[in-house]
Image (cartoon, rainbow, N blue to C red):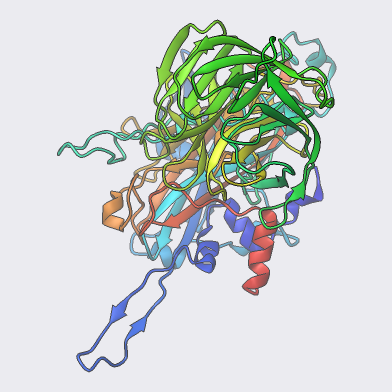
Length: 637
């Protein structure tokens, strides 16, 4: 555990409990305008409104002690509660405000920013802090919140901070299940699960009047995966959840390059083409660092002529590396797919030999990605809505029409292959419709997973780079600039050469995050119980939950009013000043035994809100730690 996990101000601790509203008001996210006017045209004024999120909570934990067993029993492997009021009273661990919110109390007056009793010696005290958790134990926290004083969009977010083995007891080491569970823990252990946001997207269905795109509480798909922070004898809970997906890791100028759409990476070198179609392959050594305002300069290693075996030039628009064949897949704007033998990438006197493979749709081809899992090719034309999927021999498998964060078709510019999530293949695609965005989708049907905005003027092809920067990066070309950008994406979530990089065996990663089961739901009656009529937001392992909660702004939640009523568009907003509740339950199934002995988990949970008015629910992004500190300094916090 590092000191960073506890280097939290009271304001940041509030973020962990979901009260981002204070930060939002500081950055203008909570600003609205009220205009009053007299006939004399005097005393005109504009008044800034506020968006401040207030929270409270009630926590329950059941370890089957005598004082609670009298109220419930097991029947056929299911928990049967005989006396609900008695059971809830016996399992209550903590409640704020004490006794709950009174029927005549205003949530905006009573609910918390950060109560002093969350501070422990200047550090936030974990809300969930339980040791000696046994199979069969379970716990629950219901978060009450109110948006004061404007409607807002809401996301639930989080981060897995630790999934520790804490050594092996003799029975644990002897258990045949020890080490067999896929580790979705801290660091590289998340690689196989990163970005599993499919369940967090909200479906858009026609309303009763036939209008498309109206997202309601009843038609929203609510099965997600995410992250959290707690210690359960086992794990702990506190802190600020600031997702980093989409952060600019670097920007590099390309000497000798002016206009172009293609980019590829073979694990060592970056490949580009100078021009919308060119017979010259440019080879660069990537340089870490740089920013939009001050890019670094990549090193031009060589320029190689692209020719056929007979020496005729071949004009190419974009490329992608095939690790198995040790060749570049390449596209020409006439619809030709080629394999290029680069030879020695550093030898500019040696030609790169292109061999034609098959014909595909023509146009400006700025999207090409090789997937080694099935030996297939993804292909896209500039600013078109369709992705084409081919076998390596040119047999067309399918076409898909991906959708963005609002459920609309995209103007696709660029594609890169992602890792499988929940057994489903994923892709990263560039979207040139509206603001330039990179959107992650499921490759089997094109449905939206997550997205982030880029500062580029015209996003083009994409390439995966897990080697140059401290974490996995997605490289993107700008059509009319000599600079490529590197954006942070979840660790291990994309492929180089169509294959996953081999991961060294993890040491000290426990099985607990995979064993713990989590349910998040809309607790409409705020009674801490998941009723039959209430809708589930997420159901799955804690490890999966942390992935989805930790991607982008987190899991988008559908509020109680339609967006138009709050002055926005897209998914539902939450009404102002009203009390709303979200339930978070964890349990350790009885079928887990010695393999989890002594394991522990720690995770953050939080909420993020933005004003509804003039927004569409796609999100402006959560500030990272450095940005939060800069904002606090500017505002004198």
